[in-house]
Length: 432
Image 1 (cartoon, one colour):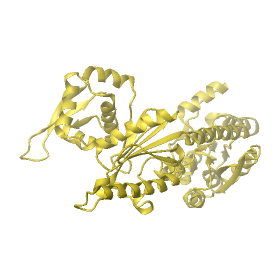
Image 2: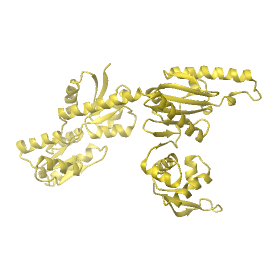
Image 3: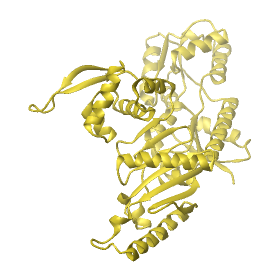
Image 4: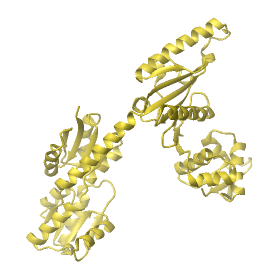
């Protein structure tokens, strides 16, 4: 079965990219041509699930697709620096007699452009270079180049954006387009293929799901006979067998109310929407999600995956019944899945291990704290706020912060008083 590559580009680059794709016999091409940036997302929507990887002809359509956020497959764009720019400047020098300092440019980063000119041994520096991150409207680029040309400050414009190129032609401004080279396209497609193969390999990794089910809550009030409990466990096992079949996995009982499912990373990634949500148990298997506590483990071996699943389950139980956590083979932990407060933190860090030895706090606790601060976008936090995010008691959060303070990792920088009659809360600045 061929790998499906979605190719998105302007009319003048798409045809060339398609011709390069034909050199890869393992790839089937899904071409999408666009004429205006405004229509790009609408063009992508019908094909978003059809491609295994995506290639964009330039930075702008790539940035728009990335900002849209609906494409989960690997994406890349063909850079215009390097051979593409060499070819354009060579043409301008030999055919038009224009130097770098006669022109206005866009897209390139100033430092990157300077390094390029130094390596090429090209004298002069562009006086006018409009760099931008992400997407930009063609009108804005066209206005920038036209104003410089009409003021006599430049003799022409060099643009990487096809829509800006067409707009400048319409306005009568001398404009030259930087197009991708075959070599550049070939290199990016090869990189995408390697990425796809790596992800495909990761999807076949062994994954273990360790489930703890509170069967007692499923019993009618006042019904505690052994027959009823046994009957409930049989029904639960039948439902989990259906779920395991959906995962193409195998179910094993691991004690009263505890089950283990052996499957693959790809199956769990799909059912949890890339490890961000909890499967809809109630809709399919008729199991109430708030009764299921789960740890997902990914590993290089079945044993490692099972150990990681057990660790993830312990973390999930710390958040309470119904929580799901995932422990990956790179020693990062994510969860609780399906919540706005989901964090991703590491269980290995030389720096945090050093702080752990100083403070007697675990690396996991310190990593959670670092992840919370990163998510909040600040280095200051109170015990009350930390308790809310860690789902622990305020006194436990105060103990953590005071422990860090005694070792110089945290510093009291002030107090906050959200309630006039309440006690002021110390505000700590953390330096992990």
